[in-house]
Image (cartoon, rainbow, N blue to C red; front, side, top):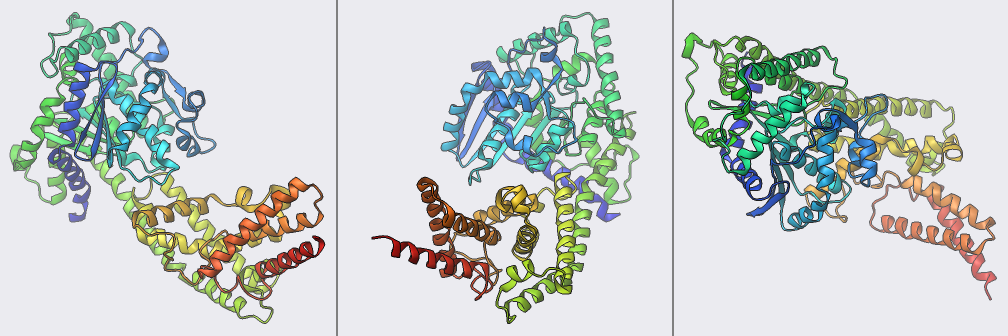
Length: 616
């Protein structure tokens, strides 16, 4: 039972970390400042080397249009209108899945803030890390800006940390949208702070009533603009019966949403992403499991009045101010006759108490079950990672056999080397066995990528040295065989060359992992990897195959402009390959006497000699 305490301790540790750093307090201070001094805009501030951008909670949402209230629109069509700002998210979407959908009104707000992009980039230039934040609808804009910047930096070598903190922000999109963020490993860049009773983050689970929403927004905006956050400008002037009816209406849909989330019926539902910090006067608890987040959203407001729900949207300053003192206090787990008999029960009690739910409340029992479900979900990636480690250890003989095969080919009398020997192996027994191993390793690594993209592995899996090195070694070992197989059967004549049309996605992903690792460790281009006996460019043989075609085309080409382009491509590759050989970044099979590369070099030398003889 001791091991079971881990997930609750992790949630408590994350809450404690956030409460003990200035991140939350500075973010909320700037959110309040933005609402009072820059309505419908943002304020920015450089604190140390951290750049903060805070969006005002006062945003003009047209509640008269259905799309502005609840309806979602496809991100793909919207992204096309604004120059593909979210292309990495769209490329992470798998065929057959529900399209990436975002709340129409919030996306419209983001479009209206596009002129802020240059100002945000100006803040980025002065910062070593960036924090986007916002209250209410401003939190939604902050999330979209953080996603935009993550997408913007995706193709560059920049490793500037981006973090987003929202306060009482409505949900943004559907499950496909959330899954795309997880596949890019960006879930950890977002922390959504939700107070115990705040109705705003829960509103979009219900079909919104335009009149009630209009009254709510006016009330909240008046309180924000008049600097009365935490001390709202009076009570919402609506008959008590109407308030009770509206709250019952929202809670009914929220309860239904929590049931559908558990049952897996999630189409057209709004879906959380990132971490959720549920805060109360007793502290806070962090959850990442989306189903648990939705259930806790329902359970924490099951027995309160609408006035409390409305007031709580403005009380974040009080909760954040109490965080530090609450986490420094020693909690008494024995209150209420609880008497926990294990660290697991103690962790569960602490998590429940931090959420603000008393042990005796009716919602406490389902809340405990919800937290247990979150624990099981949190443990699954760790167990999956351990199982993969066992599986890859069983594959060590395959790697050894490929290593033996390479040595055999490199020392063979035909002097063709690893790549060309396999390419011309035909139906030989050795070649067939190597091909089977190649397929088995591909199945394993495709499974790893699928699990990672489905969030079934630890969030930092792709940054762990053991797995990055293993994937890189697999590339150096097997991708030359993949290339040989591609050209052996003439697939390039139908599909096009390997680099552009035949390279498997796993190799592109592993390139990214390796490049991020070398950038993080400060390794320059001159530093060789620990796998020094292998050709460091796993696509080298694909480049050779293209160069062979250029050379063949050059012999028969009569168009001067096309010949000039072919010579340019050939000369560029010749310089590139010569540099690799000079820096000893190729294995011995590249320079074998009868390798494709060696024969290409000889053909090129012969062609250049013929050209020189023809010239006057």
